Amino acid sequence: MGPLKGVRVVEMAGIGPGPFCGMMLADMGADVLRIDRKTANALPVDDPVTARGRRSVALDLKQPAGVETVLQLVEQADILIEGYRPGVMERLGLGPETCLERNPRLVYGRMTGWGQDGPLAQAAGHDLNYIALAGALHGIGRPGERPVPPLNLVGDYGGGAMMLAFGVVCATLEARQSGQGQVVDSAMTDGTALLLSLFHGLRAQGVWSNERGTNLLDGGAPFYDTYTCADGRHISIGALEPQFYRELLERIGLGDDPDCAEQMNRKAWPAMRARFEAVFATRTSQEWCDILEGTDVCFAPVLDMDEAPEHPHHVARGTFVQHDGMVQAAPAPRFSRTRAELTTGARKPGEDTDTALTDWGIDPGVVSELREQGVC
Image 1 (cartoon, rainbow, N blue to C red):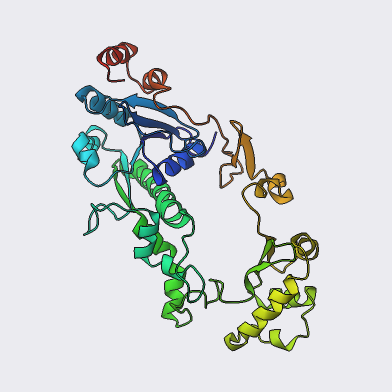
Image 2: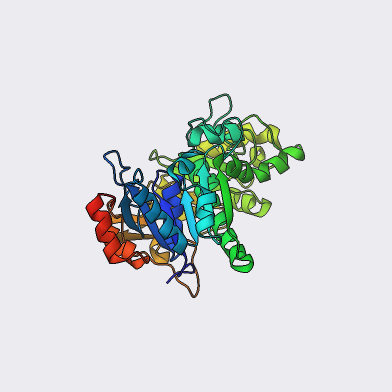
């Protein structure tokens, strides 16, 4: 089940992008084993969705036997992922040199905000800070207003977790050819900078301004923006290509309007926007759906998180599923042969300690001894 079936992953429990990466790998069929701390201040399950799909072992990593148990699991693993500040894993006795000595084929994935080195490597931070430094946050918002946080999608998940997942899978493919593992240093600042590649290219061509909310893809163009309808709800328009723009004008009754004649004339954009705002305010969101949805206008209603799973397109594709009594996104992307499916939901820290350790090759007698010693 899933294209990563047979791949074994040790995940050091954390928050944010680390669990999301673990979820992605588990969704694709990898056997991901989360190592939780067996201490009073052990991290809670990050959330019941991103913790899905893998078992949990709780160990006291302050005891040498706890560290040794992780190293024995590392010997059986293809990948290890961790999301601590640089140096934490080394202080635990689980740094990359130690782990690679035990398993030379191991791919050691490291997730941080600033990276493993550099002047800020040891500083605390969060998604908002990382995307600010990388140049992404500056471009998100309306002209003359302060930047708007785009949830924590850009740094934590796009520039962080997804880059780490991509990196460890790439390194695993290479390790199967070379027989050698390596460290994957995934920094959210690096990943966010990479996500900005298109915009650096546009800047180099002189067609992208640093003034937010004035460009083609940041809400500056009237034909790539959101609008308020008569019922107070919103719709999105993304009619970038000339043929799609022409169809938009025809369907909303502005085909002959002189204010909308020159699509790429930026001087005409204020008047064009005013015309669009006035027209879209004359009908409800549903009425505009009846007119525009499914056409080449490049249109969609703006749905909230409760509404999106009910949309007929998502229902038809099974984009969302009910699992463990919750609505959540199904694994993505999709595969024609090695189909990815949800298995288990979130597990409590240490819920699978005995069975998981035994399945990963730890002798049941040793597990019993670890129990007696309070290691697990």
